[in-house]
Image (cartoon, rainbow, N blue to C red; front, side, top):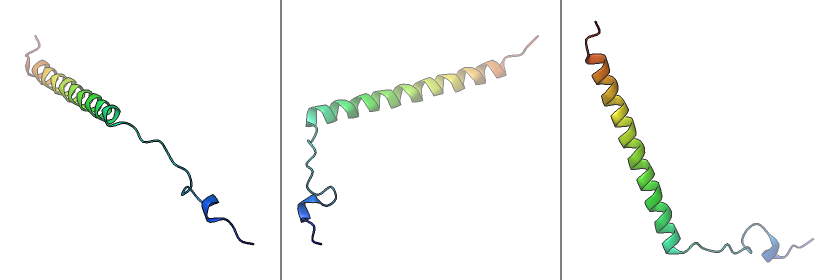
Length: 57
């Protein structure tokens, strides 16, 4: 039994490509999210260190 080559696998399917503006917007939003996460972690660590350094009476 012979199969058609166009019907095998994902070779015959064409996926629409995202526009470059959409790709750039997603990349920018991910970069901003990563930066804000790093900033919040840094502030948390610094405030924890400051709290630990305080002398409790």
